[in-house]
Length: 311
Image: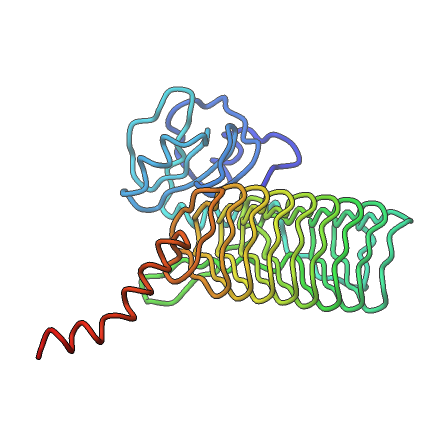
């Protein structure tokens, strides 16, 4: 999530009651979780085991709860609860704004696009040329939609990220979703799909990609260009699909994995780790199809093997 204008680090420190260690002249350009930070971003780590990763990231400003050495060119903001400080900053710059009309007065919709009755368009949404938003679609705030995009009836774009922090009393505190959904040109999204916005980064559906009905896209997912996603597929948060990936029906992809360019994932497969591109995968856990077929063939011979073995 980028700020409307750069913010001096001293101003941020004053707001969250933090001590600055390092470069006090820095300007914060945005705020992001560790997986997607860029130079100029703020990020945080509230457990020592994550300190090294945050300090070595592209982030320029890191919220921490314990003093440590600050890398050159960066700054640390020491505070009692980095998570709450991070959440406070997100809420300040992406506050909750209830809708009071089906189409927000701050939405920008090209005159050539068709918005059917019952569609709901949130604050700061942008819809490009020759789009077709069918009846009862919900497009939540800060979603950006390109040209020639079709979203079929009942889909919900920009739902909150399913992202929680476990508390000491074993309850869960929800993260404020400050990210966006970006849908590039010539995408079609089927009926009753759900696309989560990023926690603080963007969920992206690349140009020319096509989603069937009842597909779920988790927070911060990046789908490349010209991908095909069949019905009832679920893709976990922050997973990346490179260009030309095909995912067949009812496959499930875990969070934080990468699927290489041109990979094909068979129906009902379960993907739990990175998969190189240019191959066909099948099964649970998903593996290259020929290896999986040999494995299944061997399993079919096991009853006869044990029968002979124990005779």
